Amino acid sequence: MIKKSILISLFFLMITSCESDDICPESSQKTPRVIITFYDISNPELRKDVENLAIYRLLNGEMEIFNEINGINTDSIAIPLRDDESISNFKFYKNFTPIDNTPNGIDNHIFIDYEINEIFISRACGFINNYNILSFYNYDPSDPSTNQVNWVLDYVILNNLVTDENESHIKILH
Image (cartoon, rainbow, N blue to C red; front, side, top):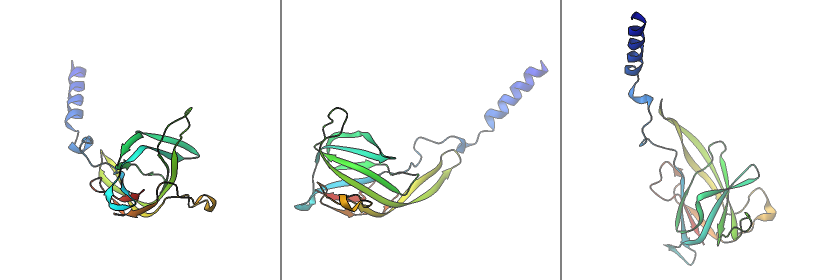
C-alpha cells in the first residue's frame, strides 16, 4: 500500500512539475522561408506567372524536388534556405515536364548567399534561423563557363533580411 501511494505521489509530482515552456505551441515562430516574386521583364511593376514552375534543391550533387512547387503556375513562391551552410543552390525550371524521372524544361541555376542568425525562442521550441541575404545569382558563380542566363533575366533583392514571410525578399524578372 505504501509503495502504491509513493508511486502515485511521484506521478503527481511529475505531472505538476512541467512548466509552460516545456511544450512548443504550434503557433510559435518558425524559421522563415525566402519569398520570391516573379515580374514581367518588359513591365517590371507587373507580376507575371511562371508557367509549369518546378524547383529542385541541389545538395551534395543530388537534385531534390520541392513537391509543393512541382509544375505549378504562380507569381510567387516561398522556399527554405539551408541552415547547415550559408549558400543555397537551386535549379528553377520553367515549362517543366518530367520525362522518365528526369526534369525537362527551361532551367536556370539560382544561388543565394547569406548569413545565418540563430535566435533562441524557448527551451521547448529551441532555435530558429533568420537570414541576411548577401548576394543572389541567376547563374552558377563557381563555374564561369556556365554563366548563361536562361529565363531568369534579371533580379532585385527587395529585402535582405529574411525574418518573416510577410513580404517579398527577391524579385525575379522574366
